[in-house]
Length: 359
Ligand SMILES: [Zn+2]
Picture (cartoon, rainbow, N blue to C red):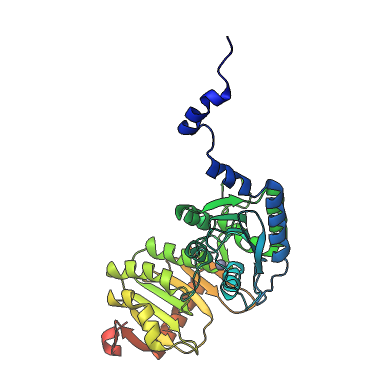
C-alpha cells in the first residue's frame, strides 16, 4: 500500500499554516538577499565617509541608505551634507520629502545608531524614523554616547520597527572610521570593574556634557544642605532642573547662576527654570561669560563639588571631593558668591530684594 501523495495533504497543510500561502510566497521573493544586504551596508559606509564635520570636536561619520523591499537603493545621505551638523537620517528624510518620495514601509541602513535626543526644537532621528513609517532599520554601530547607547534600538523596536545590526566585521570597520568619536565617549559608557581595570574608577571627569550632568545630579542627590550651580549656558537646564527641583522641594537653598548669551533673553531663561524657581530656587542671570559649569553642595566647602571649564578647545571637568581640594572648592565658592552679588536675583517670576535674599 502506498502512502497518500502530497496532493492529498496539501489543502489541510495550507489550512494549518504549515505551507506558506501564495501571498507570503510573494513576500519571501521580495525580501532582500543576504548578498544585497551586505552591499547596502557597504553603500552606507561609503556614504558615511563623505560626512563633513562642523567643528573641531570629534563628530561621527554617518551614512544612511534607503531602499525598497527588493533592495533597490532609493536615496543616500550623509552627516553635514546639506547643512552644518545635520544628521544623516534628518538629511535623508529631507531629501526624500523634497523629491516627493515616501519613506513609509522602506528599509534604512544607518552606520550609527539613530540619536534619541537633540537640543530643544530639534527632532531626534529615532523619532523621525518612527514618524516616517520606516519598516526596518539596519544599524552599523551602537552610539557610545552614554545618553544613547542602545536606547534608540529599544525605542524603535517598541514602535514596531524591525531592527537588525551590521555584521561584526563591518561594525569593526565603522569603529575604526569613527575612532575619535568612540575614544571620546566609550570611557564613560563602559562599566568599571574593580580588579579588572588596573587604574580603578577614574576620579577626574573629562569631556562630555553627559558626564558633567550626571556628576552634578549625583552630587545633589547624595548630599544635604544648599546647592549652588554655575549653570554656564542653558543647554543642560532641562535635565539639571530635575535635580534642582528635587533639592528645592526638600526645602534646600538652591542658587542658580546662569549666563545669558546674545541670542537668549532673560525671560526665556527664567521660563526654562520655572519648575525649580516655582519650588523656591533662586536664579541670577549674568551676562559675564564665565565659561564654567559647576555644582557645589553643602554649607561649607568641605562637601564635594564639581567644576568644569568650558573654554575651547575642549571640555574638562573635575570632581573635587574628600579633604584634598579644599582650596579649589573655597575659591569656587568665593567666585560664585561674588558673581551672585553682582546680578539681579529672581525667585519664581519676581525679582527678590537683596535684603530678603540674605546670606
Ligand atoms: Zn540624529
